[in-house]
Amino acid sequence: MSGRVKFCDACKIDFSTLFRVQYKKQKKWVFVCRKCLLIFKKDNPAYRYGGTWKK
Ligand SMILES: [Zn+2]
Image (cartoon, rainbow, N blue to C red; front, side):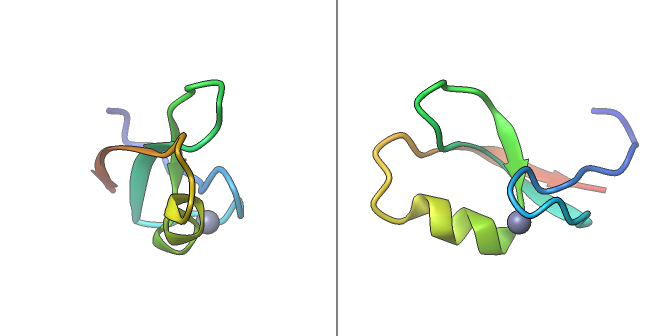
């Protein structure tokens, strides 16, 4: 992992802790914040959790 700042893929805000998830049909791994994670997780069969990233 690089030490650069990561941004939430959905709301584009930088967080010190992000969650690696898949939430689209494309099966691409992205980083999202906790708030967005909870939104994507809900009723989403494409959702997969891939770990937590900390600054
Ligand atoms: Zn977010």
